[in-house]
Amino acid sequence: MDWDEVDTGPLFESIRAQAAPADAEQMIWALEHVIAAARIDPFLLDHFAVAAVCALAYRDGETPRHVLEVLYRRAIDDERWRSDYASLLPFAG
Image (cartoon, rainbow, N blue to C red; front, side, top):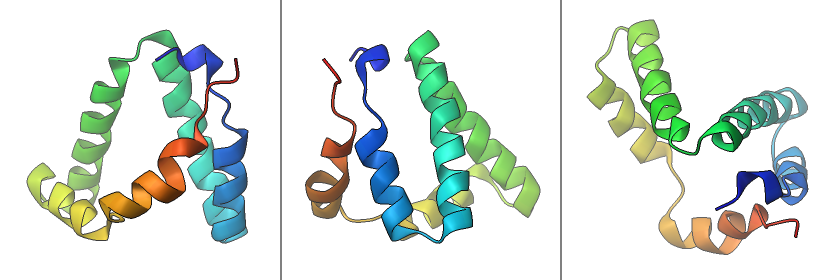
């Protein structure tokens, strides 16, 4: 995947339409930073994910495994991901 060719517009529009304004802008800010890292090196995404999970564990006084279990329980199901979100980061070219 060429992250430089990804058009974030549709995803960001969907986030703004579905979330409260402050939450939407925070999510978009976070995604912009993650995508910027992916544009430098896609393998940085693995490090971002691990770093975020560890930071959440430290903040909450939990273990990384507990954080992942909570995030898993909150995640949308696979079918909704595929139908509603996976296609929202199309290539611009």
